[in-house]
Amino acid sequence: QVQLVESGGGVVQPGRSLRLSCAASGFNFDSYEIHWVRQAPGKGLEWVAVISYAGTNEYYADSVKGRFTISRDSSRNTLYLQMNSLRAEDTAVYYCARESDWSLDYWGQGTLVTVSS
Amino acid sequence: EIVLTQSPATLSLSPGERATLSCRASQSVSSYLVWYQQKPGQAPRLLIYDASNRATGIPARFSGSGSGTDFTLTISSLEPEDFAVYYCQQRSNWLITFGQGTRLEIK
Image (tube, rainbow over all chains, first blue to last red; front, top):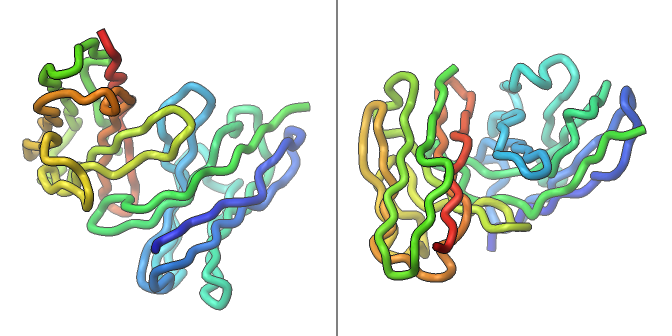
C-alpha cells in the first residue's frame, strides 16, 4: 500500500537549519510530483513546495522562497526539505503528500517542527 | 495567486442533517477543485477531486458540485464521524492554495 513517512522534525533555534525527509513506498516514486504542506498549531493548511516527478522543476510558496529547498532521491525513494534561516512562524506540522489528478491523494502522518529559542 | 474563500467558518448541525459547505475562488479554476476532511491529530484525507469525483473509499453521502468560481460540498445525512474540518484546494501553474477551512461541529 502507498505509504509516506516523514522524519527529521524537532526543536530548533531561530536562524538555524533543519532537514526533513519523507520516505515513500508502495508506488512508483519516479512517476509522481510530491508536495510539502504545513499546518501551524491550530491553523489551516499552507502549501510549501512541490518538486516534479523527474526532479527538474521546483516551486515554492513566497513565504519560504530563498530559504527552503525541496529535493528528491529516486535511488532511496525519498523526498527532502532543507529548511534554512528558520523563523518562529515556520513552526508547524510538515506533511509530504503525493499528487494525482491535481489533488493530494496520499499524505504522511506529519512531523512537527518547532522554532524557538 | 488564486484565493479560495470558504463559508461558513463554522457549521453547527446534528447527526442525520444535511450539510452544505461552500468554496469560492477569486478567479475561475474550471473544475480543478478538491475537497479534504481533517480530524484532530490526523493528516487531511482526500474526499473529492475534479469538483465532483469521490476519491476511493469515500461514502456516497459525500458529493461535490460546481465549476468556475463557485463550489459546494454536500454531506447528505451526517454521521458522527463526519464532524471535522473541511478544506477546499486548487492547483494552477504548479502552485497550490487552500481555503481557510470550515469546521463542522455537533449541535
